[in-house]
Image 1: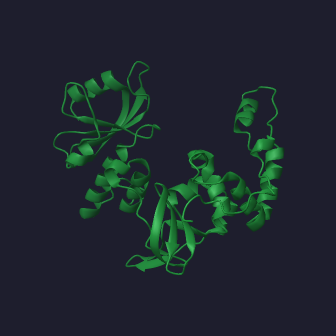
Image 2: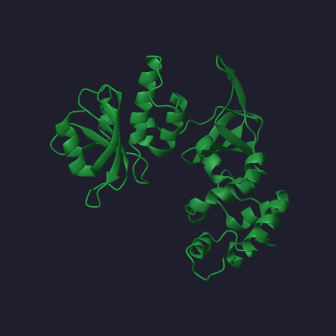
Image 3: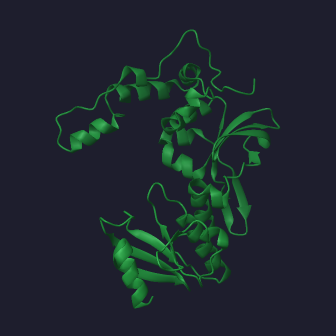
Length: 288
């Protein structure tokens, strides 16, 4: 990297503490952010004009003023284009028999990208097979979350790897089933966790924590879902309610307590898993 470009980066981003050329024309940057900079993160990919990066990935980059170079902020919540660069670096490395980004395989990069940047990668693919047979039809509940019907007349919830590993409790994860397939590299787990209709109630409940629109749109019926949890997973309901009563789900309360505020974490009755006598257990609002 020449001194002129480095000086410009220091001006636009903050002090560039470290940089590495990952392949010709592609650099990783570690930056001490400048408070006056338009960027608040400390890591970037920098792509120059001569880099072996596709036009599709280039279209997602942010121009570095006064140059033809492109910037890709890494990891801020509202940025995801960096995953396209990571994927193309991994692909280039695989084609040349090298590890361009240590610790990342091409599959890892694609799975990360499908979650964060579907405009480049597309959505997570619908799994064609489940532990209860082949998928005949499906409905997407979210990117990587599918409700499906199989050739054994079983309704199945399928949740992709990045979601279930970050959103599910250990108990819900253990209730799901996985498929094992073999290839030239040996056995690998297919990156989906599967639940039949009964066991899916607790998975749906935990997915709702950041998908409340499922309730407002009628996709999921809350009262029926709670009844289903009491019917098919009563131990989960008892344990969850005990934790709620103890204030263990009060994230804000725990944070304020850590900051020294004299406030005890609290549980709320409206957050409990309630049993309703008038509602049934049909919690899915479609496929009647």
